[in-house]
Length: 143
Image (cartoon, rainbow, N blue to C red; front, side):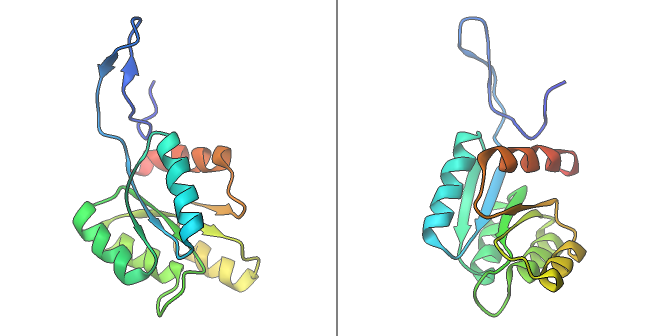
């Protein structure tokens, strides 16, 4: 059985693609440019399509409306009037976009608030490609 979230083309015996389906579209919501670039590179190496990068809630919602991602990687500690938790809730309510939270925080109140928002998972800083891949694969049944 193939994993529905990894939709990269399958190669035949001769190395040519035998089936093509669109890669899963992911929105990165991260206000640190270097971190957003790193995540974008990781996602692309894992055969996901980064359909946008947003540094704040307003930009995330605009991109989601236009690009319709399947998932969003959202920094909990997003700067601005709306934090990452509120941003993820708005993405889910308005566009049915599931989220994976990213955080370096260890504040139990913040983390409980994040859990209550119903994310597909959490990834702690520093980010690890293996962890990210596992979380993305686990999010597949919901999309």
